[in-house]
Length: 102
Image (cartoon, rainbow, N blue to C red; front, side):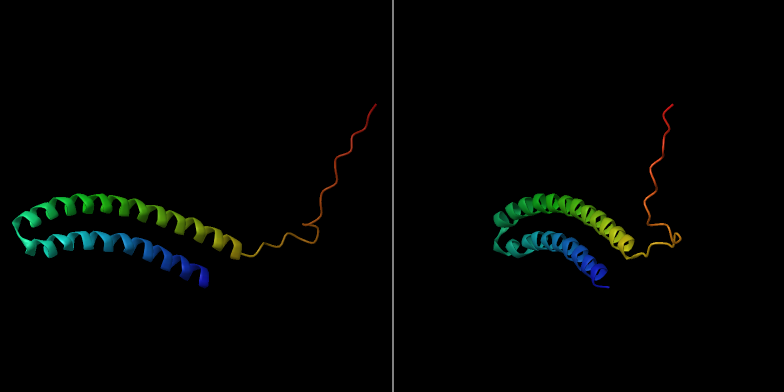
């Protein structure tokens, strides 16, 4: 139970981190807008450019994290499954074929 929970927390934290950065950059427009029109205009342009850039990186990171989550989940599920029963001689190494020379 701990491995899937750890993977879930990791995926959530990585995706949420990018969203928080985009929200902070957007809020800078409103916070610095109170300083005047010149500060608001400059902040608007810079914040929008960085917000779009961070949003694109956030989408990329989200896809990479989802891929890693899927791969690690597959590995953990595969390791947790029990091997099937193949009979009593399943673990013996087969004998090498014999060849006769004329």
